[in-house]
Amino acid sequence: MIRLLTSKWTKVVVFAVCLFPLASLGWKALRGEMGANPVEFITHATGDWTLRFLVITLAITPLRKITRVPQFIRFRRMLGLFAFIYACLHFSTYMVLDKFFDVAEMLKDIQKRRFITVGLAAFVLIIPLAVTSTAAMIRRLGGKRWQLLHRLIYVSAVLGVIHYYWLVKSDVRKPLEYAWMVGLLLAFRLGVWVVDRSRPCGPRSGSSVELPVTAESA
Ligand code: HEM
Image (cartoon, rainbow, N blue to C red):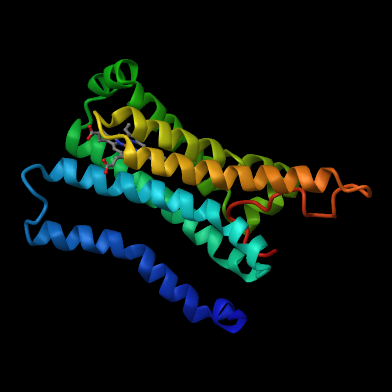
């Protein structure tokens, strides 16, 4: 298991798997299988994958801690960056294909439709995470500040769920499923933090502070 997780080929496979939703979207576009409203189809697919990748990225730490296999961390930066890539595609679909770069129309939308306002906030919050995902940026910011900054992913995931909840018209089952998942993942972190704080000898070194989303080394 450890050998599999540390192999460079596993990373290549995970990378290819992460690209699969995009390839599938491209394939459907080529074959004209996007239904009557292709823009809506792309918006929904990219929105879904953004939220999925945010949840998967958040799940790495609990997985690592529950299984006691630190090597899972190797994939977190990549998964976080894929969340960002799908968010960029999602936002670009809205900006280019839906609004045709009409800034006035977009500003009106942001003001009037609360789900757009919240979605935009969720997107803006993950931009600094992507920008500071390199080793050089980690060094430049310093571990503590970097870790603090990368907690923005929690806020972004919560806002992403609210965005989804507010945009659906009647059937809120799917956004509620995401709300449960994000809630559980955040509760896990809170639990770890509380347990660490309540240790008689104080938190174990490095265990109470969560590793940055993009960090690969434990
Ligand atoms: C991290 C940021 C974001 C996440 C996680 C996210 C997630 C989602 C999800 C899950 C959906 C629903 C997909 C479905 O119905 O299957 C969606 C739809 C949508 N999102 Fe986002 N989104 C984000 C940012 C944005 C931004 C920045 C905009 C535009 C400014 C935006 C505009 C839309 C629109 C227009 C829809 C379709 C609404 C409809 O069908 O009525 N989203 N998004």
